[in-house]
Image 1: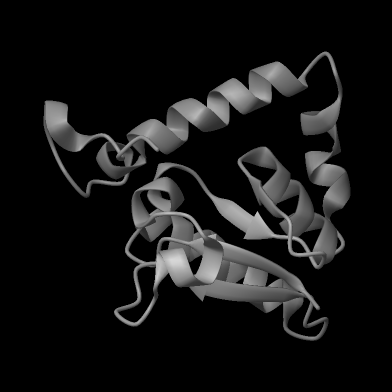
Image 2: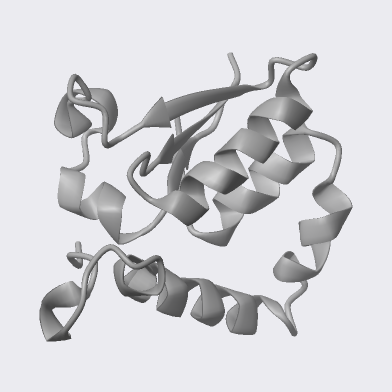
Length: 127
C-alpha cells in the first residue's frame, strides 16, 4: 500500500504542490492522491473524520492505515519522492515546534491567503 494524501482540490496553492508531487511520483507510484473537494468524496467513510476536520489541516494515511496530519504529511510526501532531506529539519526537536506552528497558522488562514474568501469568517473550520 502507498502513502495517501488527502488534499483540497479547490485550493490553488495545494493543487500546485500536488501537481509537482504527482510529477515527481509518476514513475515511483508511492503516493495515492485523494481530493477531498471532489463531489463523490465521503470524508467519514474514507477516513473516519469529518470534512471540516480534513479542511482544518492536511491529512495523510500511512501504509499501516494510521492517519497523520500537519507537517508529518509533508515529511512523508517528500520522502516518498526522494526529497525527504528537504523536510528533515522539520522533525529536529529544536525546530519542530516552530515548523508545526508555522504550518498550523497557514492551515487556519489558507482560504484567505489563497484568495478564496475575504473577511473575518474566512478561516478554515476548526476541527
